[in-house]
Amino acid sequence: MIALTVDTDVAADEDLFGKVISDLQSNVTVGDGGIDGTLNYIDDYSSAFGADEKTGHFICLHAEVPDVEGVTITAEVVGGDHGPATLDADGILIARIKNTTQKIKFTATKTGSEPVSKEYRLNGLILA
Image 1: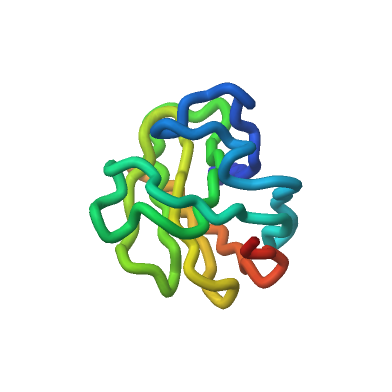
Image 2: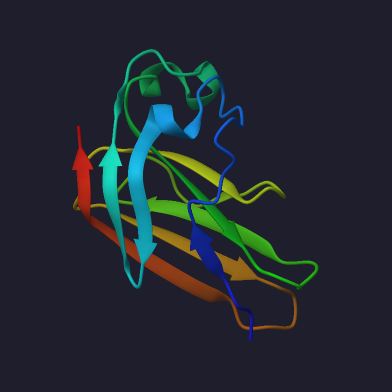
């Protein structure tokens, strides 16, 4: 079985499209089924998110499958504006969160294995 982990393990000085993790969030933790902490309001973020998605609350999470080659990880904000997106090899997700009734779903898939999904509620987040 694939062991999918999700956390906030992103280097403090890592360039996240012109921001660092402390610009986006504080005290964010990932627990069984839920994410808690504070998302800061960002104005005029990177154009990488599209012209209509440059302001708001953005979350940064890291997903990985340790010690398994050939796994694809997708992430989706359930109730968001987009469907699932495949994460790059670094496993970092940056997503705009509109409200705390949304959820984030991660799915790890490897050919010949059953996909593994984890879904996290956001009602423990504060949108500052």
